[in-house]
Length: 201
Picture 1: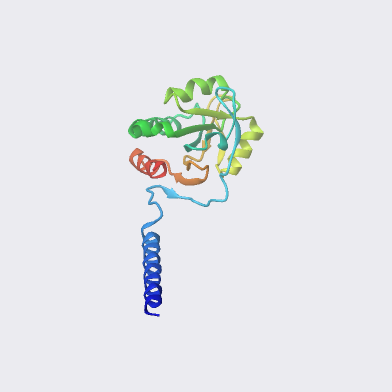
Picture 2: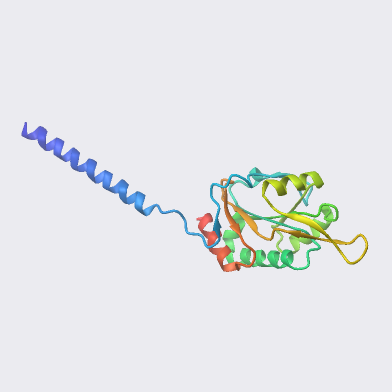
């Protein structure tokens, strides 16, 4: 009887110890701390169906296994777009070898002027790994609606000329294709590098 009691006591001690370990694990498994806006669980910005500047049809699933950063703009943008692309090129350099696991996508909001050949010249000029994506007017409207991205033509000074006002932020998806972050324009490269490293690790 004493032996049986001893075995039972030992089993109870081990159970409590394991429960304690589980409790400690729960305490240490804290959610990641991001410097940009955490949008984990967002019910929009789920996917897109567009063509890249090499002529290949693309959806988000094509980039599974990589952290994906999606920016909306247009090639004739005078300020926000080129400065953002330069910043993202700097982020890739800062990441070093980790950058190979990151895919930057530039989705044009000006399909009327941003042809495949123009995107092929513009987008990789910032970083050869970057891809430009485009669709017709209907596809552009669909993806903008899915990502809740605002865009509107603004007439220029010359007849027929125009600019495009648009949302300046970017979305970041994790390696499983789940949207995780919204990057507000002007947050700086350091915050982006920090957050991408969190998702990569």
